[in-house]
Length: 112
Image (tube, rainbow, N blue to C red):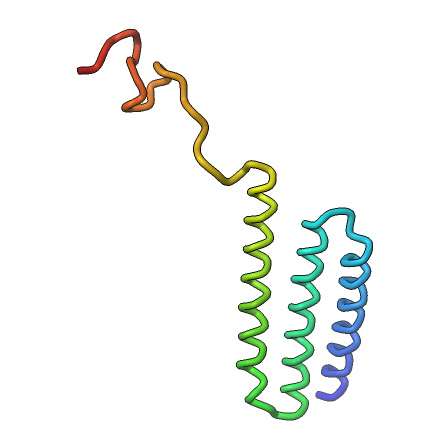
């Protein structure tokens, strides 16, 4: 069991190091957000390994709160990036006669 946990610990350290490299060198904010999410997930995995080694059931709520914070951060950054690129917002105006109900005549006929 100790061998498996040691291998898991080494893999988590390598994953955290690679995520830190991507956070520092990331070409854009989206890459940095994904790398931060990977780093937080790696930390949660490290906490899970530590809880398994020391038989600590009190670490599970910490992992859950950390995971919820990572999710909230990722969603907020996604909304920020989408808002900056005009992906989220009011629907574009439609031209009359496109066949969408309530927009105007369809097929040259007036609806009354």
